[in-house]
Length: 369
Image 1 (cartoon, rainbow, N blue to C red):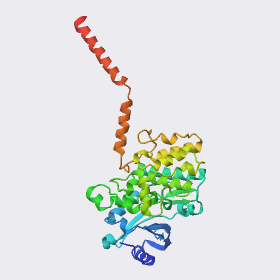
Image 2: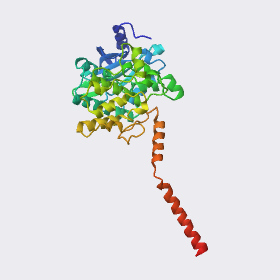
Image 3: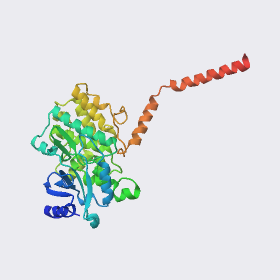
Image 4: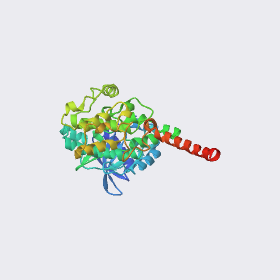
């Protein structure tokens, strides 16, 4: 079901149903398939952003459950995440034609997309600072079981010296409020296609894998990081279909050939994020934060970013929580198998020898003494 045919129709509908709570000011750009409006929240007299989701992303979503799930997601509080505030439904009696909306604070500044349109490539230092802020936000949300699924420059807001990721928790709220989740108790992934953006979508999102976890966000982060330094996403093509095919099949052009000035450890971790196999990407965003910290302090080397594969990472300060819906058991099983293979033989031999010695001593004491 499409949006109302004209922006004025949608605005009048919002004003009619939300007028007691919000005073609609104007439409904002940069919302992709969603419609975004600047409004004044009357109760607190503060500017907020109202984002109205495209109907195709909310088919089968229970409006009241969606509102409750957004309020749960609103508990995410981090300096580099834009918090969610409230949610609701416009024209609720229309069923699947109803429009779901949510609100968040109005952040003065610009999107990363707007900045990239004026500044095609980032310097090493500026890029490192921005990427660390984004990775720290990912690390925080993933550790709390929340996956974004649509990381892209349009969803990164720049205000002053800080970068903030917007819309964190919306995909999870849609999943958990969907018909499939309500009936089966499991999340569904249809919204991954509705919310994702092909130039930043992971292969598992495009192929509609049974479950999509935090590794999809790391893939999108890799696409965004690549674009910061190269001036364009690694696998963007002339059409959406060709872009999705490239995400599934084509290797990304080596970043070090485009930006030979980048530290080797940084290039390595970005390219690892772009691996087609989720298991070959960093275990969590904490690996990215660690690499960036080492690059900034001058302690990184070329092997730094390779030390954190899914089968060989050391423990991280924050590891993914319930949002790790894919491959955690396989990773854990592989790690435990590797540890068992490396266990020294002495931990089995020594107790056996001690037991034999004890038995021999008892036999000597009882029968031969």
